[in-house]
Length: 217
Ligand SMILES: C[S@@+](CC[C@H](N)C(=O)[O-])C[C@H]1O[C@@H](n2cnc3c(N)ncnc32)[C@H](O)[C@@H]1O
Image (cartoon, rainbow, N blue to C red; front, side, top):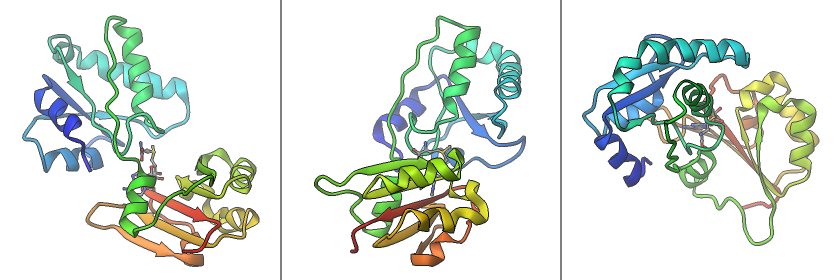
């Protein structure tokens, strides 16, 4: 699902950073670019924390360490999964970097988001006509998620694992739903599609997206 424009940017870049959750951990973005481009990828650890100060300090430290690499580069790319503008932790990286080097310029290259990819893997149309389609993050909390779901005809619930065992009751409280589908690791070798009520058991997979429709197939 990597776009031609993104691939060109990666191949032409002077430096390629890849986001990893912890030192030595594999990166989904890196596995995708490795299949298409023979480039050296420099890992940057994106700490999985919502503490902005901790996250900022960790990213700043790495950017300072890597300064000799990026200072001599004209173009640096950071491939991410899905669309570069949707729930992308890369945004925090950009903020920290821009504060260190205000002369840097950002170019966002759009990608295929998890909800588009998931719908296509299952052969489902996401929204039709005047249907309201919402994108909702599970991290927003029980009440905010339920409210957002109540007010739409179809939805993509990102990060559903954040709701834990409450996932089913939250989704059902905003029902009835004509169709429910969860994709785990869509498009990756371990991809799994789960339909119906079974999709509402809490996934132990972070790369998981829940699609909901009022209409039945
Ligand atoms: C930090 S967000 C990144 C979203 C990404 N920028 C996009 O446009 O899809 C991470 C969330 O995206 C969703 N996601 C990303 N890749 C996925 C995949 N391969 N399969 C299912 N869901 C995925 C999951 O909901 C995951 O919790």
